[in-house]
Image (cartoon, rainbow, N blue to C red; front, top):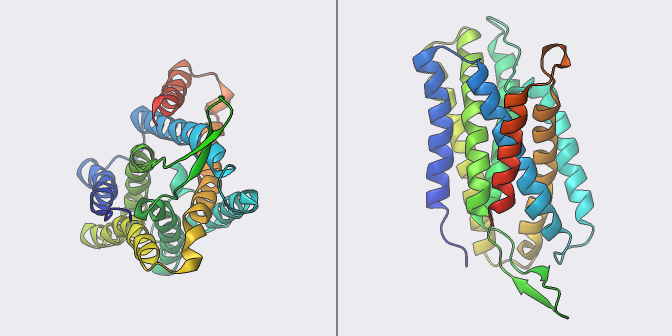
Amino acid sequence: MNDLPIFHSIILFAAAMAGGAAYLFTGRQRGSGLKLLLAFSAAYLLGLTLLHLLPELFHAPVAHPGWFILAGFMLQVVLDYFSHGVEHGHAHIHPHAGMRHLLTIMAALWIHAFLEGMPFGGMPEGQVHHHGHGHDHAHLHDHRSSLLIGISLHKVTEALVFTALLVASGLSRGKALFWLIIFALMAPAGAWLQYGLIASGAAWTASLGYIVIGILVGILLHVSTTILFEGESGHRFNLIKFMTILAGIGLAAIVS
């Protein structure tokens, strides 16, 4: 039985609130610091996905994991259309865009955040690892702590841009704070839903963790590569950004 996702939920909620508060207190949503944080978190999530989550998923006792990865990737393509790139840190802000427009963006972000939070309700067990001495071992590798680092950093930048969008669209800071809290609760809600489903003991939930990880891998591949491949002005080489990306991948390489 997995532990209650209390700690993970608190961190995910706090990360989103910190990002939103950073805008509410400073009024800034752009700058080199934010770009580097975006690059680092994207590189870390990409590295974690390719070096840990993806290899283990293809050794998992679930049929055709590639379909779940594609489903997550294509789902994020659709969500991006409605969220206008908030996940990537560069939403196009339209003053007084109207509540209907904002609700469309928020619905896409809620789905995105909810799915990102689900693995924290219980990671799948029994991934197979080849040890090179004639036999395999099935170990439980709980990557929630490693994943929490990347998702939390992602939540900070995402919430900052989202809050800036709300304020620039004409909402008062009080209303912006209300919608920020709702957004911040989405990832914890996903974690608690998955925990509850797994705890129910229903037979169909045996593969739930693997399916969710597959979908998340697809989402992270889309988000991280989109952030990293968004070029600088004039497509100039940025050494600091490049070193930041290497640092993110390096951290992902050493985490377990």
